[in-house]
Structure formats: C-alpha cells, structure tokens
Amino acid sequence: MKNMIIFSTFILLFQVALYNCNAEKCDLKGKWKNELGSNMTISETDKNGYFLGSYLTAVTTHTNVEIKKSPISGVMVHSSQPIFAFHVKWTFSDSITTFTGQCFVDSSGERLETMWLLKATARSSDDNWASTRVGSNVFRRLI
Ligand code: BTN
Image (cartoon, rainbow, N blue to C red):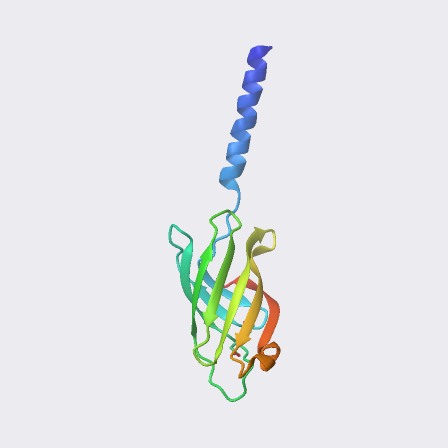
C-alpha cells in the first residue's frame, strides 16, 4: 500500500513537471501590430528585463506632421505571461506615451493587452488637462 502511494505521488509530480514544461510562454520580442495599425518592434530583453525597440504609429494628435519611427525603452518581469511597461519618446511630436500591460498567450494567440497615457507639452498648468490622453491598445504578433 505504502509503495502504491509513493508510486502515485511520483506519477503526479511527473505529470505536473511535464505540464509546466509544455506550458506556452508569451515572448515580448518581435514585431507587433495594434488595432489602429501601429507597428512596433521589441528587441531581446536583458537578464534584468530591460528592452529597447521602435514604434511606428499609424495615428497622431497632430495635423500636418510627418510620422516617423520613434524609440521604445521598457522593462518586463520575467514570467510565462510577463507584465511590462515601456515609453515612446515621439521624434516628430512634443509628447511621450507610456504603455503598461501584459503579454497573454492562449487559444486566440499571443497578444499584448495594454493601457497607455500620452502627455503632450502644455504651455501652462492651466492647459495640463488638455494635453493628457489615456486609452488602451491590443497588439497582435506579426508573423
Ligand atoms: C503624438 O501624436 O503626439 C504622438 C503619437 C501618439 C500616438 C498614440 S500613442 C497611443 C495610441 N496608440 C497608437 O498606436 N498610437 C496612438
């Protein structure tokens, strides 16, 4: 009886280990596109979770500006579905956007579910509210 219990415990532990090995991992690295049509590329993350990248937005708050690729700087917490935060310092605009979110992977694929806050330069603190926007974006992997 005792041997049976030990054997069953080993089988259970083996199955748990096997499940964890096969569990899908969401990887931030690569090319992504959101529902607005914006594209971004995220580079390899270092051992501390820091990464760089580039962002080409499909939309802008400005009229008559030429949209240009802008740099991303971010950090993530290593896990199978990592949380992350990054900012984009727009090269063609006087604004910065911060994104924070989580990388999910399931039957509908890999995606980054984010919320963002955009801050443009206000002329005075009275205009501060008008120079701040918030929203959300979902990014899907480009193959
Ligand atoms: C600006 O217009 O001042 C800079 C570009 C801002 C683009 C925003 S950031 C949040 C949202 N998601 C996108 O992909 N683009 C817009």
